[in-house]
Image 1 (spheres, helix red, strand yellow):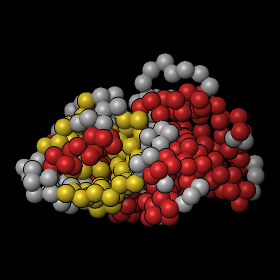
Image 2: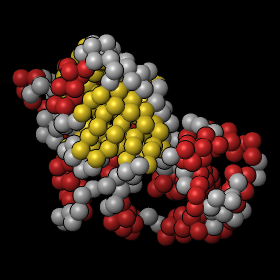
Image 3: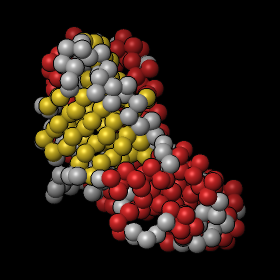
Length: 330
């Protein structure tokens, strides 16, 4: 495969920070790597890089606390820990990343990524030019500004993102099959497009509204009504019967069609939307400083605090109070 489409298969490990920095600069773009363990890492990188759009998929760990500083990296580096944690610092805002939440390091910005010693993570690297080329083709017009992603990727709260990461994980698990498959050169470009397009359609960014507008006509009107009703009335009590009456179809038909377009059932979508709004509010506690967590929970339609806390932990990997305390500390 290497002779056909170039060097794409990586399997490296080293104790030396200079080696890790040199290798990852070639994959992700130029950056600074800081650590107190310059010659005592347990660095490992296993992955593949595709030839046409230079997309790279891999698994990486450093085995020591490291700090990555980037400025105009030239690529979007997207990662999700399979164990441990990391923290992205972007313009003074901090985004914790763990098994429940990935992060995107922007290719056109100055950011810092702090990676814990025990962090092992999946990583996808997509050059800025490849993102822009693919998005312009999808929109059928040139881009007027750089693509800016929401840096947080909620694996549980965003079903499409969860599926995207499952696909990446499966690809890495099957990496040996792909490297030995003689037909891979013919599939590579299509696979790169699949990964990039599904990311652009799943993760929020400054062109998401334009993409949704292009796709909107394909969504039946009654499903659009239900979706808008959920967003507008999410703070109020909503039951399945309300949505069935609004849609004018049977419950089974509503669930089938809603899941087709939004990746989950209407009531699960409502629950995830409410959780996300509470999460956003807790990360910005100074906007409503007198509002307690319990008041916020009841305001968004939850009636059982203990059940809410459990669902919140499942979605974001921490307690609501931890989210608020971290935001206050920064």
